[in-house]
Length: 406
Image 1 (cartoon, rainbow, N blue to C red):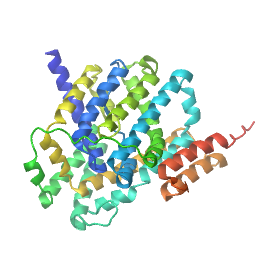
Image 2: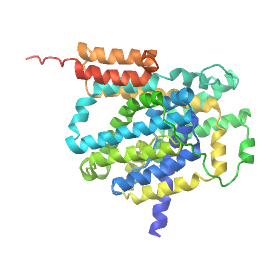
Image 3: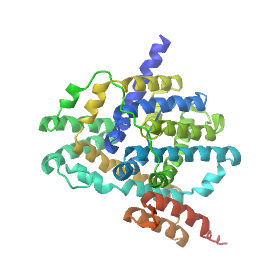
Image 4: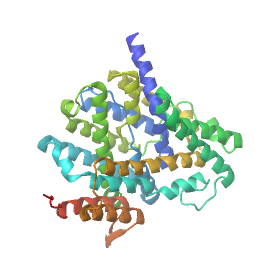
């Protein structure tokens, strides 16, 4: 009976994460069944590294959505996966440095004045894509996929449902705003008759997920490595949050070096199968808070169930019928929310933007990142997130700290 109870709680945790979990591959062009498989695999690897001490589930950080979309469009899925494996390697390097030097150096290398503008760039960099999709167009706006008036009704329905659930929802429902938006948008799409179920009918009940082997392209690697900055900082916040919930200090036991290494290994494993990168999932942390489900075995069950669901072919086929306006409506909130996290980082840490040093770092990072500045020598070039992330770190290290006023 105990195992049955733990399994049911595991299903509940997976259900909380499901909407956000499948949204990532739907937005980026990856396979939803592969995402389910790699989320389960990543969670099990994380538990192995952390000695199954933390009640947490792994799936992809939304901070990776915009970079993966750009990477897939620019270099294709295999090369993007190679870049994500390199990003996972950054986690392992950070874990080693934390093990050797302690976690103080992260605060020196990645202070709020560096992290915040990079997060804002990640959020706003592909804002036009969200708007185009909400209007029923392809991401670049070149192809009209759904009539604009119909698309607006559907996308606004999905967006408003997400906002209402996030704002007024109670209990577990409050933790599933994205799932609510997906369901309402999908039902509106059914009413307008814009969904084709041919692929669902022809899909097999049992099917091996569409695994994709990574390829290694230095442009994609250089682009993805700085992207790891934001999720790494997000990871520390998530570990602090779950520590507060359970009353245990996971930064000390099993240790921040182990938790970051767990994320890194899980990300490398996910990308090696063609899945999105893995990081600790705050929606599930919220569910743990509400239900007091502190037993890490519950997350083991959630991971195993996710892997089993990954082999149900019709589930993936249904996910792939998701209309563009539904995703566009939710993305309008999602990308803005990521940017808001960056703004909140500046506010919460009281970064003084009247100080010329801080203003230079934040201002140049934002304009270079959002404006599309590119530096290159021959075939080597840096642009977007990779450029502004590296630039923010270099400026922070080189520009002199302000003198303290007596």
